[in-house]
Amino acid sequence: MAITVKEALSLDILQGFEVIAGRKGLSNKINHVAVWDYETPKLIEENFSPEDFALTTLVAIRDRIDELYGAVEMMIKVGISCLAIKNIYFDHIPDEVIDLADKNNFPIMTFKDTFTEDVIVIVNKAIDEKKEYENLALKIDDILYKNLNEISIKKIAHKININFKEQNIVAFCKKKNNKLVGIKSFSDKEMEEACSKVIPYKDGYILINTFEDAKQNDIDKIILRRLKWWGFSEKEYVIGISSLYENLGSLSKAIQESLYAFKYSIIYKKQISFFSEIGINKMIIPILDNPWVMKYYKEMIEPLIDYDKNHETELLKTAVKYVENNGDMKATGEELFQHSNTIRYRIERVNKILNENCKTKHFYEELAVAIRIYNLIKISL
Image 1 (cartoon, one colour):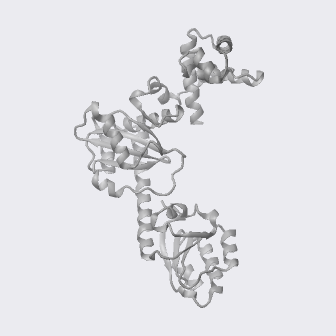
Image 2 (cartoon, rainbow, N blue to C red):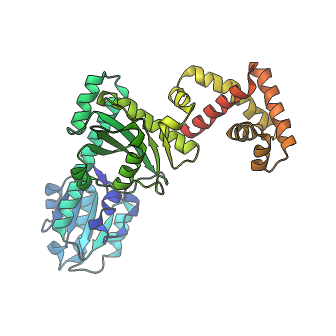
Image 3 (tube, rainbow, N blue to C red):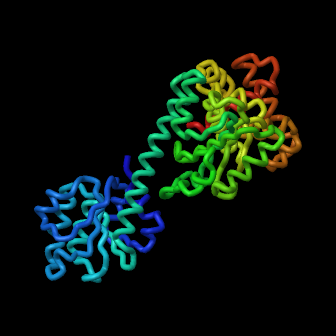
């Protein structure tokens, strides 16, 4: 349970740090911040530990810069994560040290105005928060996957936040670029909003909101305001939101619904989706792992994939757009830049292929379900 060098560099306190060597080692893990003052290379081996973030002014060798090579060599041997040098005694690091760091993916950074004491406090705080978040993520996994009863779920929920109320609604938010850069701290806001909790989870964030007495008619507006207050804007994040549940023991359902609604947002290119508004997908998304669903998918979709491959056609693409346009030939043709008669011919061909393979009796209804499954599986792969 550590942060990476890259995550550390995203902290405000390290904004003035410049990486001058070992950029390929930015994924190195940091478990502790330590100061290199007067240790010789041998004392470095005795006093430092693997995954330390070493801070120094190079005071120990301020008259002997040539000794930096041996010190860095020892740090690499020990397994230290990186070295940050405050530019007090030296403005230049020897080229052979840069080469050594690059060769061993050992990040070396330089900085000027930041106090080392502040770096120690804030980076160590970030490490502690990361550990806490990872423990909370494990609790979310327990809630989702351990098949617990409502009493057990409520106990875990109160370990996450003892101030949780009974009513709950959950949002799952993920950066549109699909990457979390650095560590986002919510500690200040959590002091003000004691009945909620934000937890980094699966490269996104779970936001658990609880209430004493929220009205169903107002809940959509309330949760949108809270998302904005927490910093989850629709411009930056893709968001899925659960239904409102009256019992904290139902938190597993709320969390799962938020994940399903998020997946719906991804598939249909929505910025934000409410589980209560995703229609038939409320039934389809939760059963994607069912073997009978996969069997149905293979019977309906794979013949179209094979036909397109063998005949260089676009029947599957046409079927997808046809379903997305609710069976409207003209709208499908306009979207695909084809005449509606061409679309009609393609859909008739789809109908014939499917009847040959699985004897569909209700063509459009079955095709619509199969296409929805296809879209969901395509995103999941």
